[in-house]
Image (cartoon, rainbow, N blue to C red; front, top):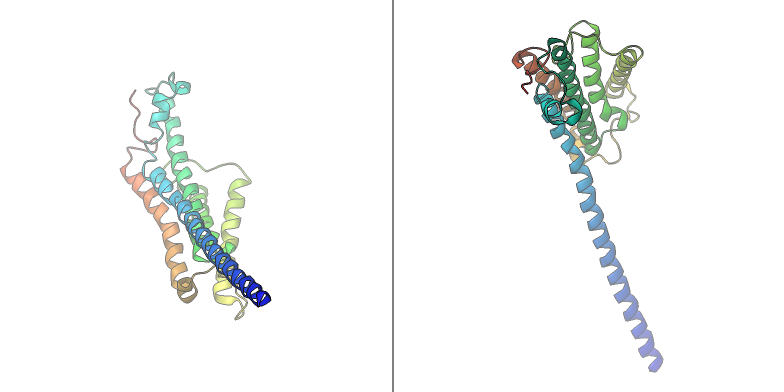
Length: 230
């Protein structure tokens, strides 16, 4: 009898430990899932930062010129200095493009698209602005420049072309079952509707920055941005 009681007690203790261990494992998985959601959501805020830069490209550098000690001696009324302000407006919009690329590429990855497919829209967007520079269409805010020296534009345009060739091949030419479009983390919705989701996302990722660039060219006084008043 004492041995049976000890055996029963040992079995009960093992069951209790298993239950506690299972509860702890469930709790840890729950915490991991929670922090994963944070890790997915927060980087998408780069999209908000991007929109801020692109919509205020003509003015968001004003506080730096007016308030920072390093620029207090700048003569903001000097015509030659004001010409340089056009480059600041151009760069501010370009910073928006880069932040947009970070945010949307993370979003595409979170939806479950394969790396090369996820980054293609952002690369295409940046490359399209480089093509504009090389076609003498000016920068996104209308600055009449031709972009950085070689080989930067050539690399940007080549990469833009190649990633799109890959997208076209994977979607339309790859043998059945061999296309590398989705990652193992793809959501059920993405798996079911990946083609329309990708098409809409692709058009928006490229179209929104171009629409904002058009807006800037139409509303800014000129390519130098809004005049600085000290």
